[in-house]
Length: 412
Image (tube, rainbow, N blue to C red; front, side, top):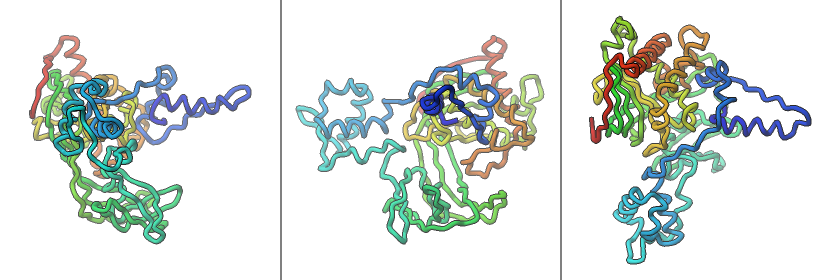
């Protein structure tokens, strides 16, 4: 699946242009929950309209560089601000003035720098100066990496791929925004291990369905790559090497749901009936599969989003599964997931159940970017978790359970 229905039809159309009579388009599934789901439900891809673009123009991380670029071309005037969303633009302009990026004059706001800001605005990543990947022997620039992804992709010892060639990273210098690599063809691959903590900063929407609570809001995701594994193609782990890299904090948007202990471990109708020891792996597997299916409901790639699951979260006080945007300030993906929560989680459940593996595989609950090495994972437990969440929402919608909705601002 190329990521969106629009991309699918665009690629299919290329074959159609050159065919004299008829063109054949073949969809080959990868080991991925979304591909697994689409193989069993091709109508979702073939019979639905193409997606609308997802963008939050009021996101200050998006708006600030755009206003800076606009002011560098022509001074910003008060009558220009409605073009950018007046309330949000006014707040961002005030921040840019306070930071010395813009200067307020009677005729408007002026760019203060000598150089134009346009080359500093990234259209590929989350912004900020990119980390250059350079071959040390030739000083050849191979590529660039977003700063937020550098620790995971170009840490010392990482295997780096570029145009079919393989390199190994020797050094990562954040001050110089530089990763030095050398050409090598190792027999192994590398995968980073990280620790992640997520803090609820603000709950904007909250709905209670009996023992299940669904929320949307702002979060701070702090991650730190602490080591990496070297693996052979067989999957055998050769060793684990510790790393000393800085922690990184991302302020973004998330959708999350909590489940009470009574529902998770209870054996009453509607409960998951899980033993406490199975809860972490069940939540973890449900989180992975949900991340894999969200691109079906939001115009994103699974690498644009992330997730955290825990049997007891400090802010919610319950077992919680978070799925968050991977972009500062959010890109609208969490909002799409929240708006389509029931079909999203139902599709997630269907993808897991449709997979013919017994305990979990890359086609259902394993993730290629898991910082915990895909451990622990409980495939059957994930289905039980999703059944419990969907069942609680369904009962509340039918008036068979407690339901309450409210909006909360500030920390929980």
